[in-house]
Image (cartoon, rainbow, N blue to C red; front, side):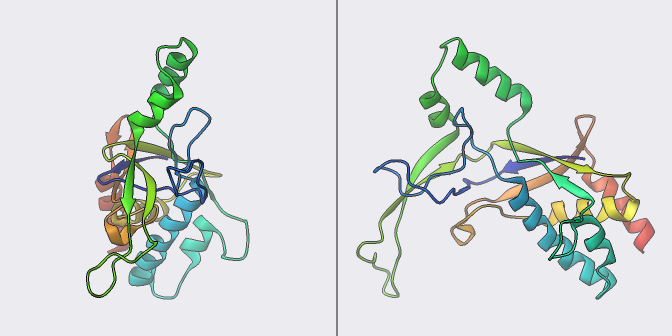
Length: 207
């Protein structure tokens, strides 16, 4: 199952490091400085949505969730998530451009990310001393792709709960309260958005 993740706001996929004196918080980047989001983290976000929907539909029966995502204390899971990256064609073109010295890794970083300044505000609406921070953000409009691999064919209920969870997922990354990391997620088959189609089939089975 291929998932498309469209950033409709700037996002911060923090790596917990400051690589320069200019930036206090860096984002996850590969060897070519292309931003990405960890598949394990995306899986965790999607599981939260799936658990909420499952409870609404099926009460305390977690069989469906544990079958897909595994138990909280175990590794036995039907689903395997790749890291969320740019389209493979884009990545290959960028690698080619770097190899041929058409552009540099600095150019790549500037094309896909910006640097923003943040500060904490007290109850009086005044910036708190010593809280000024510089953070790198991934630009909005960028689309990332995650492949969800599964050991065996998914049932309509399994595909449906995943599609519903993707449709309801609104944010990834940090600083959600400041409007960062807003997303629209879609299931893609044959270059087409089939999210609603899967959800409709799921509704027929459930209701």
